[in-house]
Length: 222
Image 1 (spheres, one colour):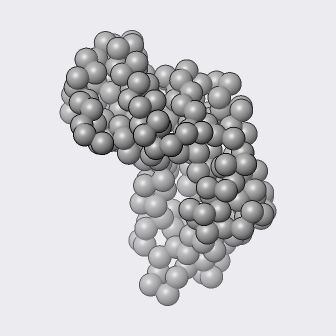
Image 2 (image 1 turned 180 degrees about the vertical axis):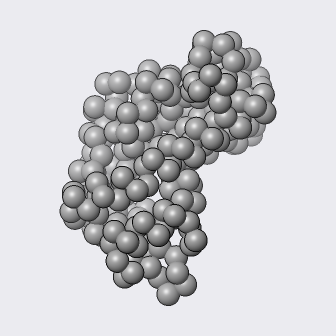
């Protein structure tokens, strides 16, 4: 991007969206995408950097062995997840391989959006705060729910046991810590309609703060 910046008072603004496991950040991102906002998904890049033939996949195989591959040569993400969420040293080893590649992909994509004349972009990442990107992606939006609901939703959505969910939560900062550094907090304790309304309000507020007409991202029929 021009001047190697992610955020400025004028021109392109890349703001952040995060939360915790099953907090609802993907639903917020989907709403904003439906309104025409450009979304950069960390999880999509995390998959792209470990596709067959990539250096990322080769390094993971070197670090964890060929058993982490499926018969078709792709990464067995479930097996890798079981390994790293049970062993903090293994998780750090994986992060050293993947996170620099994800960050590079995010910066590249943000540069493309800026060159295309987009005034705003959103970086949606579950570990945005943990990776030190909070101050680079301002304003920062955090989607929050109470832990009990978070665990129940994750168990249902991802078909995980409570212990598996808690292991994944332990790898993230508590939601309270993310809320503490947020510019906007979206409480997702209600239904989807309520969440959509709150997401719309926050995007409109970010637009106005950045000097962008919210009408650029129209509220289409839900």
